[in-house]
Length: 185
Image (cartoon, rainbow, N blue to C red; front, side, top):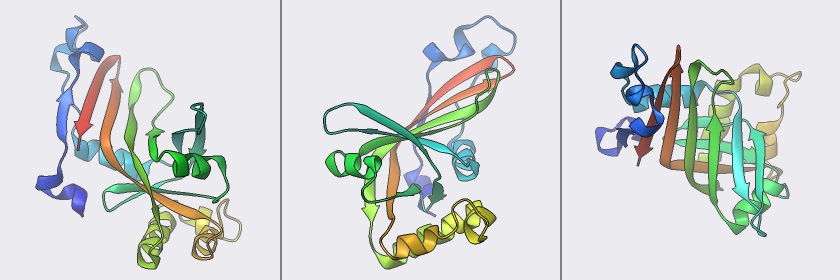
């Protein structure tokens, strides 16, 4: 996979200004940057992401989406006429955010990049397979929340976007010890 090739690994930096490294709390002196492999596992397993786009008039638009990490990019889908698709047609820059709503534990991740609409049939099938593998019965079962999404994509009723990280940020919390990592690709 492209994101596991050492030549494509991001530059990883701890930003001590927003980490506990400058805090005298016990354990804070050991704060290190989060390894990209840890962040990638979080992206692979996260169920909900928040997509941030910009409307043509400059106002922000934020909405939850499901997304699947595959071949070094996050894939998400939407209807071609939905606000997020219209926003991305105007300005493809976006951010996908995921994490935990807990103050003292977890890892929040923000992926910034440019959304590219996927239209090649083989690439669409790989994205559908990634969705089905990740979300299982939510997509494959007739009772699933997103059942039929694969057919919707194949028929052009839904479009798929891929976002390769340009920059990503990780905000880690472990028992009150905080870290802020930046990955540059």
